[in-house]
Length: 115
Image (cartoon, rainbow, N blue to C red):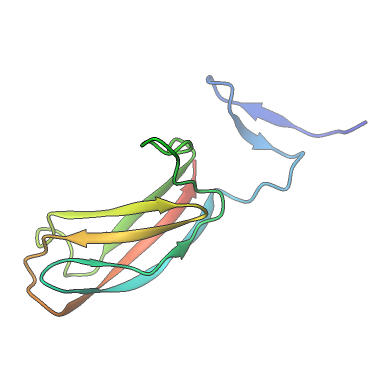
């Protein structure tokens, strides 16, 4: 017999579960330097256990695993596109169309959440 406490939201998803070893909500966080060449650049692969890349377009768990990005003084109006490419248990931060010029490095901070 097992004992524990589970709380579900209105969609039937577990939001509190004392019966498993589920990690906390904040899964990964940190910063990465991205070198831009002609306004474009990619980070190295960042580990995020549980994230999936999916098949046929939309990843299977975009409603469960999400990444929030924020940056230093270089980010903001100088970037027209910053986002992530999802992988299996990882993601890559992509920067494109920066008006900062060629051969510039920026720092991007990230927080990966299991929501």
